Image 1 (cartoon, rainbow, N blue to C red):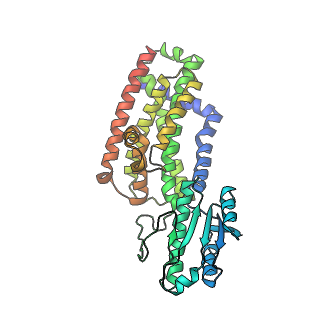
Image 2: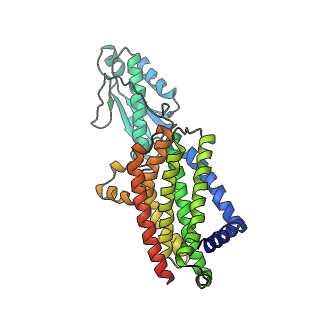
Image 3: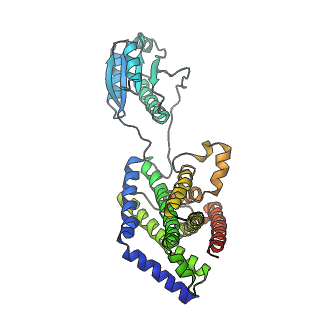
Length: 376
C-alpha cells in the first residue's frame, strides 16, 4: 500500500513541479490578494464629502466647522447658502453628509442651553453613513468640552444622543484598534479555503476530463489509495499557503502572533482536512472543470459571507446562523484570530477545534464514499 501511495504522491508533486502556471498560481495570487485585502479591507472612512449650511454665521459656528476641517475625516465641498443647495448636494452625490447650523447656535451656547446641529446623511451606503455619524459625534463632543461643557445636540431624524457621559475606552488585545489586525488573520483563512477547495476539486475533475482517471484505475492502485494520493498533496500545499500568508501578514503588516504555534497547527490541520473533504465532494458532482468552477463559486461565496469574516454572525437571521454551523471557515477564523491576537490555547478553543474535527470527519467520509462509488 505504502509503495503504491508513495508513487501516487510522487506523480502529483512531479505534475505540480512541471506545471509552471500552477506553481505561479500557488504563490503569486495569494500574495497579491493579501496585499489588496490588507490595504483595501477597512471600516475606516476618510475624506467624507461634506456640505455645510451655516445660518448662524458666528464665531462659535465657524469654530465648529473648523473642527471638522481639521480632521481628515471630512472634506468641506460646499458652503451652502440655503437648504435647496444642501438638498441638491446630497441628491446629486456631491456630498455624503450635510451639516446645518441653525440661527441662534451661538446664543444657545452662551446661555448654557443645548445647541442643536442638524446632520443630513446619504443613507444609500448605510455603513459609511453610520461610521461618519460616529465621527461627527466624537467631533461635536470634543467641541462641547472646549465650550466649557455646554452640549451640542446632534439631531438626526428623531434621534438625540445622551450628553454628559464621558467615555474612557480601554481596548484589549488591539490597543490601537488597528483594523488590519482583524482582517489579516481572516484573509489567511479565506484565501486558504479558496485555494485548497479549488485545487482539490479541479485536480480530480481534470483527471476524469482528460481520460487519465480510467487509466489510473486499471492499475493496481486501489480507490482509497488514489484518493489519498490526490488529496494529501493539496493538504500539504494548504499548510504551505497558511505559513506563507501568515509570515507575510506578520512581516509586512506587522500583525502580532502571540499564541502557540501548536494550537495554530492543530486548528489548521483540522481546517484543511475539512477543506480537502469539501473539494473532493465537489469533484463527485462535477464531470468537467466548468462544472467544478460553477459549483466552487456557488458554494464558496456563501461560505465566505457567512463565516464572520466581515459581518457578525450574531446579526444574521436565525436560519442563516444555523447554516453557519456547517461552515468550517467560521470556526477557523475564531481560532486564528484568537491565536494571533489573544494567545489563548486549547482550553478556550476546544469547542471550535471539536467542531472542525466533526466537520472534517463527516465531509471526508461522505466525499470518500461518493467518490469511491463514482469510481466503481
